[in-house]
Amino acid sequence: MRAAIVEAVGKVSVTTVPDPTPGPRDVVVAVAACGICGTDLHILQGEFAPTLPIVPGHEFAGEIVEIGSEVTELSVGDKVAVDPSLYCNECRYCRSGRGNLCDRWNAIGVSKPGGAAEFAVAPVANCVKLPEHIDVKDAALIEPLSCAVRGYDVLRSTLGADVLIYGSGTMGLMMLELAKRTGAAGVDVLDINPERLATADKLGCSRSGASAEEFDRPGGWDVVIDATGNAGAIQDGLGRVAKGGTFLQFGVADYATTAVIEPYRIYNQEITITGSMAVLHSYERAAALFATGVLDPAVFISDRLPLEEYPQAIERFKAGQGRKIVVQP
Image 1 (tube, rainbow, N blue to C red):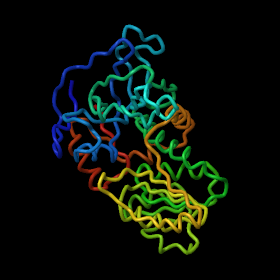
Image 2: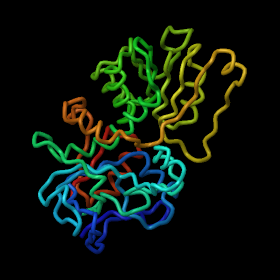
Image 3: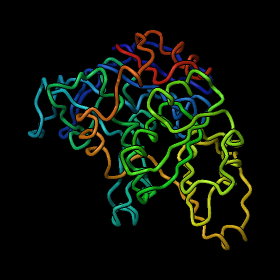
């Protein structure tokens, strides 16, 4: 089969690799679409993936073409979206229901061969069967949506909160859509990319701008979400949290990124600083939300490129062009 391969740091290509074989409780999925996100850039930079080479792609959906000998829950021909998270189910975090913090955390497309290929193997337990009305080529959006759902689980937002989101890429826009549906009184969005910011306006944010200085809000926001991973945005956002408010680190920063906090202010104003790590008990809920039309794929997916153009798709994403970019075998 054909697959994208991150061969070494900074080097990605598309080549022929052996067809995957399912284990007893696995299925083989003919990939319909695979999304590209910031994690894929980190892998290309030599972060996250424990070893290279690796077939990337942790956001994917497709049709089951082969099942393992012990699989009874799903059948050949079923259309599924795949939760990439792989937990050991033995460490203290798994035993306490915090699998996303697993000491032996793995993920399809990060530490195991992923969906940037014609076919991918996944445990049957990680597959969610899709309703007939969903176009499986759009369902690669479910994985990032499940991360956003996890973010809002962490926030435990109260009704009537004023929200500020840094970044209007795919994840920032998803956080916008969820904020609107979790009772936010207003949702302001910041980005230095005018094209992406225009999409935030289209989706109905309260205000948009390139800098928080453009907004007249000296008291700050109840909820501030960084969806960029950018050091400057993170530092600025930490200073925009209102008294009693919460800062959520949602964007994935480089390992070396740092920010300065003000301990007295955090203490005196009872500010919460928290993070959200990938998916936790949120994939099925994201699939259910997606089935209701919570996201418009025509708005979120800006580019659909053939798998052979995976290196070009990565470059396009790196340049900040478009919104969600997917490759289709």
